[in-house]
Image (cartoon, rainbow, N blue to C red):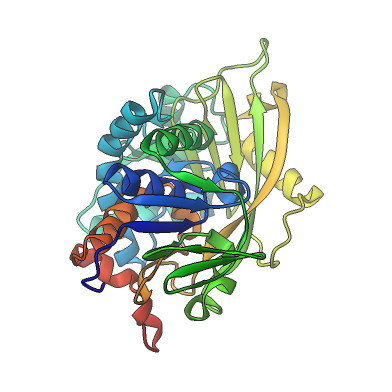
Length: 372
């Protein structure tokens, strides 16, 4: 960052990342404009809200695991601060995660996850099918084993987004309900006008690419479909923990909500900017969830929708300077909610002219080559 005094900050994109940056920057004394035609929509509105770096750990993604684990540790404090600023719940759930499998191949994959975490010095509790059902009685007999991941958290994404909108408004963030077309030093170009600023932060998720040449071919959309269910009076209650894992090889998750709701996800397709829900996607989500929790057959189906995860070639987000006066905080793939605290801390450090903490180096745009 330059030594120029920064007063005016424009945040482009009003999902969980953009709203959080706008709120915290305004609370720190910056004059902030949030540019988005419909804040709290898009992928953040669709998300399951899992805060689960251990459950999503994968060989070769150790930097992402470190980033996620660091951010997870900051979520309780972040949630408490958000609740105070917004005057309402942050939506954080602390019950943990159960990873389950229903056949031999699924259980072998869970063993691989547990072994990988053990190699990294991180442990989870292996459970038999009976032990899994003792923890969560609504799970069915097809579940043959699992892993208890008590440190993972979850958040009701829509409760959190409502709180972020309230906190941003209370902190003095000015909303510009328009679509940005380009970001350059000193200005964000809109359709027919511009917003002047000292620093612009691009946090427009899957739509970040066209806003700056350095992001053009670095961010791609990955479609994910989710279903939202609601418990009926005659149905078993949802599990208290997030339940996830491979079901006949397909990734699936069931995330409870405080109102008796349940979120099922998530499919994954490389189909560009298509956000239509497919019959095949709904079929697979329901079949996999019912294999784990047969009682969902008695639930009401209240919503089927799809969102676009902003993804990069190495699954790490892009957090850093694209050029003087232009920062990026995008490309979080499945981890937008999980990585929010660590992303916000990094952007605030850069606005102050400081170097962010060392683990953020892995997310710097310069890793793709070229000049930033």
